[in-house]
Amino acid sequence: MKIYNIELLLLDVLSVLACIFFCYTENYLMLTILIVLLILLNTVHILSRVTKFRYSLIPHKKAIILANIDNQSILRLYYGRKKEKEAVDKILDIIEDNTKKGAYIKKYGNRFLIITTYTNTPELINTINKINENVSKIFEDDFFTLTLRFGIQLCDEEGFNSNLNKAFIACSNAKREKMSYFSIYDNEDVETHMKEKKKLIELVKSLKNHEFEVFFQPKYDYKEKKIVGSEALVRLVQDGHVIPAGEFIDVAEKHGFTTYLDKYVLREVCKKINELKRDKIEFNTISVNVSRNTLCEDKMIEYYSSMLDRYDIKKKDIEFEVTERSENELISPDEKIHEMSKLFNVSIDDFGVGNSSLSMLVESKIKTIKIDRQFIIDESEKGRTILNNIIKLIKELGFEIVAEGVETEEQKEYLTRRGCNVIQGYYYSRPLTFDEYKKALESEDN
Image (cartoon, rainbow, N blue to C red; front, side, top):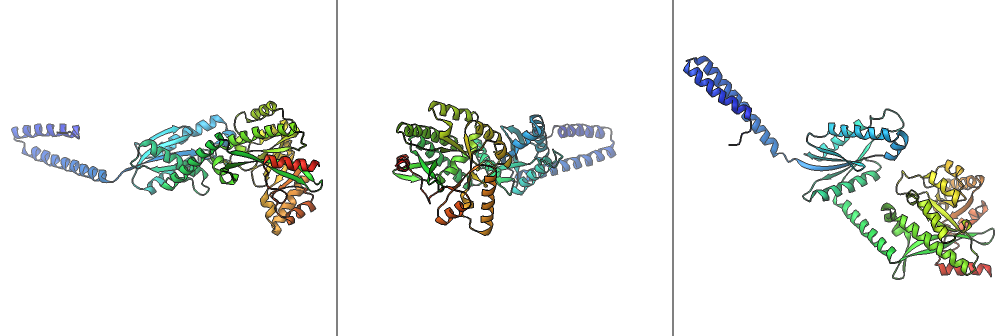
């Protein structure tokens, strides 16, 4: 017989002995009282067992929850690593206080891992609401409100690793979500994730097979009537078909592949510059794109310096265009741009649509600013007012101006009338292969 309550068994044994004693002493009043008490105690025990049995019939499912500190880099920069660690310890305590007894809670890399039972989804959402409500009170100031973003996986019959991976995907979705601080995994997420992984594998394979090619789009000065430079643009060429960057760049940025593309383009451009010099073809500065994600990689500036030294590239030969756009909105490496501008010619690409600070433009030795295409094509009254003021601001700050994405005669005329003479876009030329670009430069010399 399985014993569920050793204390109750001992009480029953003592009660039986007491009954024998009261019978022997003929104390029937005490015997009656004792029997009634035994009946009451066993009734209570039976009812509690029934209640526990019914409770066990309720389906208690498991969920894996991963939580990230929102804007953790800002937390570290503003408060320092000591305060950050204190905040992490407090968050662990808050999670433990607001989750079910028996939940598994652990710091998991830079995330918090929670494995808990639940009866329904609203219960889980209520739990994370309570956690975030308490987490927001850790710092009592108006500057920084501490919040967590949660990825929730309602565990299925697959193994732990599979469920954990799904929680990771949900957590990544929550980080990108603007209107909510949690995401519950569904099968569409994994389909998107698998498609992106497949695309990434194809991109890596294409890089190994030298299927990426560098094209050159000229920058033309309509005042001087000549090519004054070009931008190196990477394209994927498969079976003779040119695939524009727009079809793969989002996946490349999201999964960190742009760093490898940036390195590849720089190396190829250095080789082409040496070829132009060997053939004694006059050329102006060639611009190479550098994504902000790439710039934030460790020792990237040192890498650029070593590449230019290896191919004997002069400062006047090359310019680095730092794009304002970034997959990670927290990335704004103004200090690295400032450092880079001391060593190389640097321009700001996509001006007006990203996250450059005006103070960075003033403090750094930026050479050129490119006006983004969206300001060129917006012909509304408000759009023209914005464009006019951008041109005025750039000129007053003393930067060179390039207007990119110019496609029509009307756009070109509007820009040149306002002193924006250097144009890049399909109106003057599409991106050219290197051989085509060489011919365009040679025709100018004749």
